[in-house]
Length: 163
Image 1 (tube, rainbow, N blue to C red):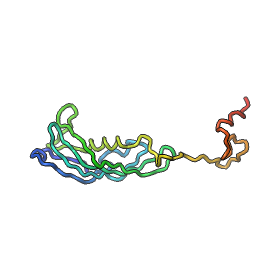
Image 2: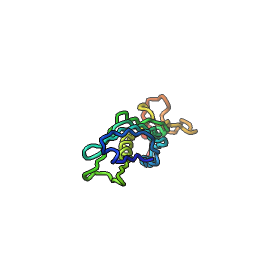
Image 3: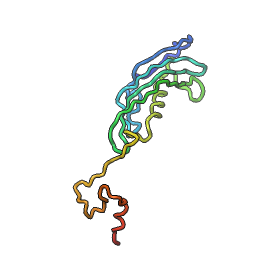
């Protein structure tokens, strides 16, 4: 369910406290990155206040996202946690949000910050060595590949080429 706030509830100067979950489909983030596979909903707990020119949001966001390591292609999960998140939704000016029946949808602001938190090159661990190379049934002789543990360069096989 989208996060929608009624502006008339905020006009009295009181702070609204809202919390809940937003599905991945509602956030529209499932097809943003080919290495990211969000499946679990976003959990939020926010204080919403009407400020001059907009709405101020403060609180916490949390979502667990599945990623594929760009080095070894292993799937892993990582929690994106925003313990002291803040955002501002402008109600006037060129960046103002659309107001429908005195209500504002806050979901796009949350979506943007979550997408910005996705790693550009997700790694299962910082020391990931990547894919392991196997001979897949070839014998070591004449393959041009250095023997494991040898100090020969991978380019040494090119020295044996005859033109």
